[in-house]
Image (tube, rainbow, N blue to C red):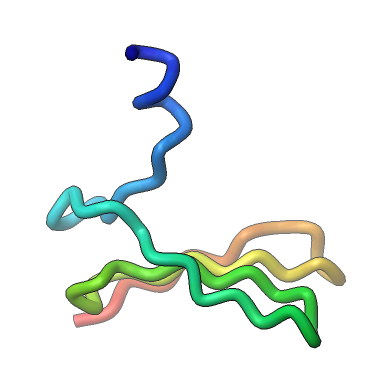
Length: 55
């Protein structure tokens, strides 16, 4: 149970689980808060995550 919670990505503001909005054509992985507070994008060219806090 504890290990499962370590790998679940949640919004830092409201603690809801992030929703996957991936684009398979560009290989870009986008996970966002269902309420619109937070977005996390993985860019394969940069090999890193970009976190965006929305208001």
